[in-house]
Image: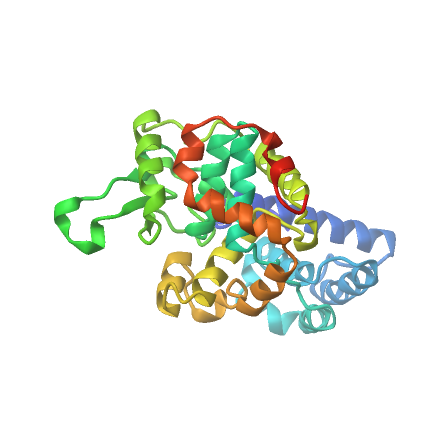
Amino acid sequence: MGGLSHLEAAAVQTTTLVSYRRLRADCIGHCSAHRVAWQRLTGLGAAGAHFPNARFPKGVIPSRGSQFLAALAHHLPGLSAVWKFVLPRATRAAVAWKRRVPMSTRVPMPYLAAMAVAGLMIARGRRRMAICIVLSFLCYLRPFEVMRLTGSCLIPPVAASGTHLDSWGLLLNPSAAGAPGKTNLMDESVHVDLDQFLWPVLAALKVATPDASSLWDFSVVELRKEFAQCSELLELSALNPQLYSLRHGGASHDLLAMRRPVAAVQRLGRWAAPSSMKRYAKETHLQAALARVPDWVLVYGGLVEAHFRRLLESSYSADVLRLMPGR
């Protein structure tokens, strides 16, 4: 294992490469501790079955099995085309692992709950965070995608161009930055078309942010922390809220409310196939999640939606929660 050329190593993203290296080291360490030979192909096949079996009872997420196989294929590129046949035991173990412990999906964040979180962020003085949350929900953005946005990524509408270009657009993973997205694509685009209340906000951001500067004055770690704190204050812990819940929630909301046809949701989410979208578009999960949101939070979220721009321009105190009915 090893000895990959620079371009071979660059075939996967840096974070994925780090994960592959950790899995490789974990597997070698496990085999050494249990005296399982892995240096030859026959021994590697046995090790590939032994390693998943040792990790399965310990509650490791099932995707680690398929990640382990992907790591083997990456570090042994000569076998990448036939590794399923060369390492049948490892393949069967990974498949059985996934079937025995199905991958759980994130609970989609309801729209008014997301707006309530944004409103509380405004009340706590984190206005740009609030915009980031709303933009992530409405455009189904992944956390790293929204954090990469700069002033040049905000594309203003062209009024005289017709209806398809008269809304604000976002340029994701621009080629000038040299960092592709999750699917290794650059210069992807989405449009903020149905939610015109956000257009003046984006216009103000465009004016206030130089092209090369980030739209945000915080890190993704700070965003996660603030998102978790606001969700807890709004009694949303039952939803297990995460930043990725916004992407799930946006797609589910548009389908459940019939705001967009399925093809438009797939295009906005940039899913290559409808099967990829199924993990995100969970309309019935959204209904169940909505039932777990306190009524006063839904009322608050509706008020934030109706007055989002005015709230951003004003300064009201976080004590607003004490005025909410049901608190």
